[in-house]
Image (cartoon, rainbow over all chains, first blue to last red; front, side):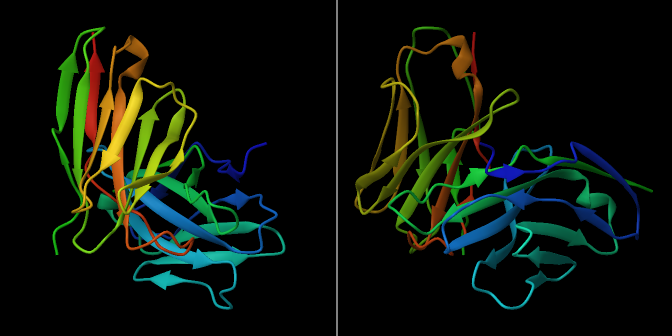
Length: 116
Length: 114
């Protein structure tokens, strides 16, 4: 079963507007972390923002914020005031706390294009 | 603080050859993980090392191996290369193994097998 689901293969947004990238997850582990990464065409994977399962408040990092709805198992990334440089692939990932495996479980990604 | 450094950036090899990829983690980071990224399969976990010990291994054949040195630097080796091994190989480091510890990635090594 897919543990991380990103339902939007591609998204378009106008420069300076806000955009929401969707991510739903599935886990029975009470302890987990959710991460968003940005991958430009150059290939590097850039860490953007983190949300822990026990965090009471939504995470924010500059123009990035996370809309965390634990009961619905969703962790949507909100990018405010989009810039041309935001055009990239965006990946949602999860790391579970139980057991010994600390691998990142990835979604398939959303390709974001920012139009001038 | 320097980021994760992967070398080389690009590699072209022929089927049957072997290849070694190198990864230097962020200073102070003791956990190193490797991921393979392909258009068809997405991002797949290869290995995780911590304190020179392999902690986890993904579902890859034995041709894929790795190791970690005492300075936390890591290498991965792929022997008897196949066309399907063509991929972007990403190395990541983190401070520790806790689930809330973000992984920081290098620029990747793009391997092409012909």
